[in-house]
Structure formats: C-alpha cells, structure tokens
Amino acid sequence: MTLSTLAIIIGVVFSLVQIFALTNPKAFTEQARKFHRNERIGFVLMAVGTLWFLRNLNVEASADFAAYKKLMLAGFGLIGLLTCIYVRDYLAVRGFAICALLMSWVTLNQTRWAESEWRLVLVVWSYFWIVMGMWFTVSPWRMRDHLKWLTENERRLRMVSGIRLCVGVLIVVLGVTAFRK
Image (tube, rainbow, N blue to C red; front, side):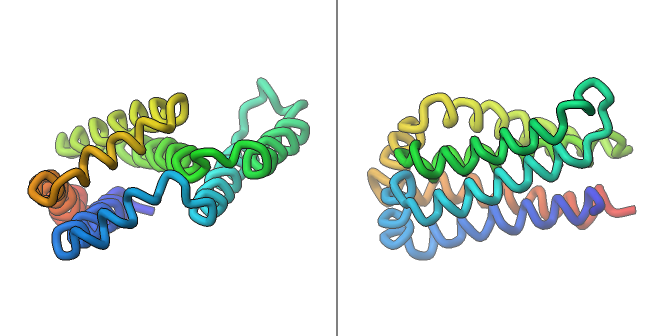
C-alpha cells in the first residue's frame, strides 16, 4: 500500500465518523456513550487486533527471537482469546487501543521514507494515536469519560467534530496531492 492510499483511507474513515457526528448528533451521542461497554464491538476489535499483531509477529524476520517465534505466536494468540473471556470490562476500548497502536505502526512504516515534508502531519498524528492507545490501554475508563465530555452538549460535539473533520479532510488532500507519486 502506498502512503497516498493509506492517507486517503485514514482521512476518509476519520472524516466519516465526524460527518456522522455533525449530521446526526443524537444518534452519535447514543452510540458513543455505549461504545466502551459494547461487547460485540469489543470482540471484533480484539480479534482484529490480535490477528493483526500475530501476522506482524509471524512475518518479522528478527533472529533475536526466531527460536521462540512459535511459542510467542501461541502465547499472544492465547492472551487475545483469554482477554475476550476474562477481561470483558471495557473490551471495546482495549480492542480499539490495540488497533490504534497497530495502525500507527503501519502509518509510521509508510512515512519513514516519504520525500514530502508533509509526512510529518501523519507522523505527529501517529504519535498522538500511540500515546492515546497506551493511555486507553492502561486506563480504559478514560475513553468513557472523554466520550461523556464530548457528547455532554450538542454545541461541543459539533465544534470538536468540525475541527476533526478539517483534520480528516487535510489528510485526504495530502493523500491526493503531496503523497502522490
């Protein structure tokens, strides 16, 4: 995948969430306030995150842990499964955090050799998501608190979503222009 394609996908997905929040704030508020306890979404996000991580680990060619690779794959796979069984509290937040960390990894790998200085927008974006992913992994109730704050009133939701939509559109525009080869 090229950096251009990645930027367009990230920008479009991020923008679609903001458009939903702007066009239907009541439905967005209802969904956002239930997100942290949604087990179905949690199972899906944990499965995606676990499989994605296992794939990354499997293709890693580091000789440092080559002798332990099969054991690590089984162990991390088991951790993902057992998390879904025994750590159901805030499972959606934990799965979201894992996916955010892995998406940041992909983005940073793609921006590493980009020639455009605009790549720094995606680098900063990725490091923000890394910090956020770690923060929500350690204290997942913070996402509940953030979503409650965000959806406390419609004016705040529209203002924040409008700013986020501008960021999403900027990333799409960069994908179409600055990152195109």
